[in-house]
Length: 313
Length: 313
Image (cartoon, rainbow over all chains, first blue to last red; front, side):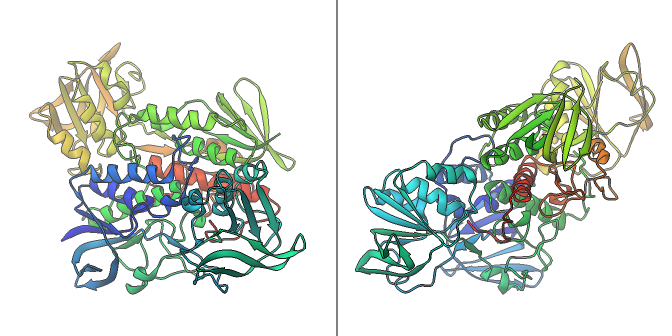
């Protein structure tokens, strides 16, 4: 029986594991994607103290840190089911293994949104991908499009522009939500072509992507000829597992957490991009902060002596 | 005129500066103690990705990161006054310099609590200090006492025990609030003497500390003969400046913040140990997370186009 089961191998999960271990809690951490959304950041730039680091490298450091504690058991695997079992919780992995714990932290993050247009599913993995920064390097001297206007779209376009021949940045608005840092970066590249106030209507190809059809003509033509399409239109919180326990979500679909990161279900906590904490601001820093608070919440929950509020050093 | 004035040179302030700079905001960051409470952590251990780092070194990395952006102006100095001036804010430094900005982030952290016993003020700096981990190394082969039961007290005792001859750990309760990690560390040292369920009544000396008087006898004697007394009984939020602007505080004295880290005063944000966010859990991780959210809040506040809720990549 573990003290805490942490589901998710991203910044929130690993930070929760580090804190839980320092509280001497017997900790099981599991997930199917080692590194979580952190894997998608080609250049991080805003993890304080590391001016320049790649997302996967940062996540590797988080993982090593968590695994440096003997209290932490780490497993890569998909959690299929979670259920309350008496006064504790049991998770069932895809492998059939069942693991039990006194408390749970859902650090399940978010999953990339789909456009929902014709051809998207057909060409998924055949030129259509959901992580520009992960996949751009496979498109050397090719023509690609990035769809979206947030940080990951604009960062993706900037990264892709370093290798691709042409990068179309297709965005339904005129303004970007992305950090101006990234907007300036793409504006400085002469191989990024802005297709603004326009939308993708269809992705077409033959075995693999050949291009996309726009909702209205761009420079007299409503199709773009392409080798790759990177869809970066945001993410939705991953709440399938926390829903199985009945954790309440808000109107946007995020797990509602208390200041302790506890969910509506006693003993069940959540941290990271799947929660409504940190003003929904999905960053390494906020995930880490929430992970720390969640582990502290678990420690207090399991302690007979509750810790009083206020900073006590 | 700066876009944002950040008061405080700790983890929250520097993280806010990094994020503000990436938003291309003209940023002024100022404080009188470069590194903030981070300076007091001899061994951090829970900053994810750095298994072993000293607090001052981590804060130096935060600072270098913030100062790598041309958008950031950095100044060491005490802010004496802050006032609303038309639609913006003006801070007056001890030097007399006045600096103006459109928004403010208070990252002023917290200050160490005093015992309030006889002799404490008299011998302050003469054997009485408020940071065991900072000062322990001056007490090689001496006898010292650490007062308190939280993380900084128990960590302080563990660090002091590496150099001092004897370390008395005086705590008013029987149980520690500290991370078990640290409690185990002190228990493993045979030169740490636990003085539990007892309190300091007086600190005495002659020019410098010679000992302390306990509320009740310990091993038949109500005095301890000492060369140093480290008082580590927690901290109180530093809210003098935010009070000048009328920022609402909660019943515990912490600045009340919204999910955006905005205070009750429009355009004024707060992040770190001085706020009621992150369940009052004062950590590098939580300070960094709050600093990021505050800078994002400032960016949205200054943008004509408000960013919609939800993670949009």
